[in-house]
Image (cartoon, rainbow, N blue to C red; front, side):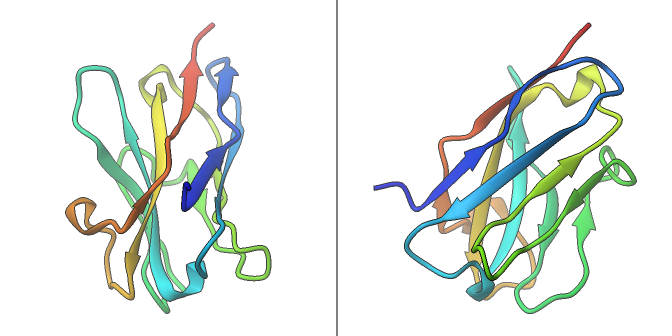
Length: 123
């Protein structure tokens, strides 16, 4: 049984927007640092956005800063990622991941991974 499920991916033109969502089914996201990661073909998975446990701030990779916004909805137990001004370089499989009561979203410490959702940016 998957613990987290990503959705919202698709094909979009450069400059367009997508909104991804991550839903947890068996645990409360508020007990975790929550993050979004992506893996492009031939590249390693990288962290792009994170909300630390108990934090009211967000951390972003330089490559997405100013274009992507991560948030946490504790009432719905979801973790949306709003992606604007998409570029071809954003093409990847996007994953959400959680780290138990952590100050950072370290890939090697992620407790739960989803299967990912594909984002393709192309004209």
